[in-house]
Image 1 (cartoon, rainbow over the protein chains, first blue to last red):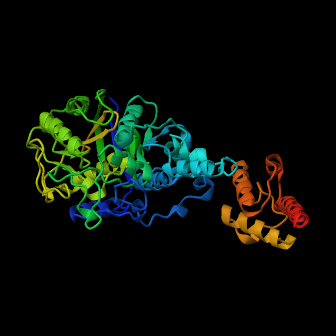
Image 2: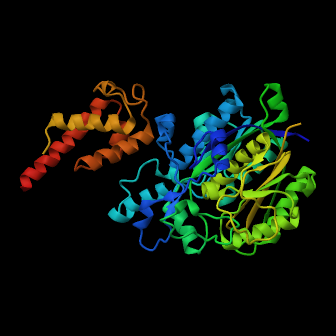
Amino acid sequence: MTRVVVTGVGLVTPLGSDPDSVFDALLAGASGIEVIPAFAAIEGLSVRVGGPVHGFEPQRIPRKFRRSMARMAQYAASAAADAIAQAQLPDDRFGSGRVAVVAGSTTGSPEAMEEFFREYISTGSVRGVSGTAFLRVMSHTVAAHLALVFGATGPVHSPGCACAVSNQAVGMGYDLLRLGRADVALCGGADELSLLGAVTFDVVGAASRGWLENPTARPAPFDRSRDGVVVSEGASMILLETLEHAEERGATILGEVLGYGESCDATHMSSPEPDGMSLAMERALGDAGLAPADVDYVNAHATGTLVGDAAEALATHRVFGSTIPVSSFKGHFGHTLAACGGIEIAMSLLAMKRGILPPTRNLRDPDVADIRLFSEPLKTPVHRFVSNNFAFGGMNVSVVMGRFT
Amino acid sequence: MQDAEQVIAELDAILVNQFELEAGAVTPEARLREDLDLDSLDAADLLIAIEKRFPIRLDDEAVRKFTTVGEIHTYVRELVAAANQGTAAVG
């Protein structure tokens, strides 16, 4: 069986872009959540806080590429450039047809959609619609632009399963490499903070509302006081290679992909089922040939919703019991949507390297099934971890990674 | 009402700002594709920017056929002049 390893990671998050600095911020209990003044001006919207990215420099991307790139694609390209730099992957590999791109977003750019319809609805004409509008709206805008920017001529796939995009991208990339369809896969997701994202969770009662006075107190995954998602933005890119390809060029290996599992609840579009979640975890363990006790850490999706966190804790308890440490990073970052899984994998790889686990921020009084949650950084050896992501539509995705030995 | 020099200065400013060009590179002789690296996607956005700035409607086909900055100058200057004459006649 072809072994697949991680040789680079790249991030854009509300807490910065340098993975080591972001990890330090998690350990220090930092929050990327703040009041978003524009939300207050929107009639009917109860959400007031979010997690924006600061200090991003789009000029890093040449205009010829950037002209058709929404913020989400720009974030993705920046994260990808960092992942490629860390992996020290030579430029000449990209045109070989053996570098795949598997990346997506929750939707095409909401900002571009707003721009298009604002012009059309206000004027009744499409005369002022930019020639690049559709290139920012199309569902594979992130993946297609990554291929363009880096000249990657291999398979390009665009998973679109909302909040589980980047973990699914890692799983799909893993499969492409195992099937021999590519040697390298740039995998991840990106999203931009938007009205569409905030409204989506607000109207179904799954968004945290208010908190103008104390924005960093939200979200509160697994906590009794949790009241919903806080939407944020960012990008994550995980660079996968076949072990053979990585060793042939002497690459530094950050970890190994050991297994991947997914399932669909197929019962409700927005209300999750523990059975589907645990099935994805079991399938990932089965794919890896591991028992639950072989895993040292479970990185939870837990976004801070009443129903979602409870279902996830129950599913996690059923598979892993009460002794394996579990934490969610949504309390630090908010919910970066399509970017979250890759960000969490990048942080979990660093936790494995450093032997210390960031806790769940804003967790004081857990009221979910009996899993081993913790509120302070936890020093413990990590040889293997599971990263879970779930999404509207009943999507359940689990990835197992471990130290390369 | 805008005179010809003003129209040309504003067109050059659109090219510089919209496409992040060096001001010195935007000369009447500059070739859009070969010298300024502009293509059909840029032509579509150039048309929008010009129509937002001046009270004229450009012919899509004519815009696609431009090969130099000077041709844009001439075409837009004539349309703006015609629009100005129309305004004056009405006024």
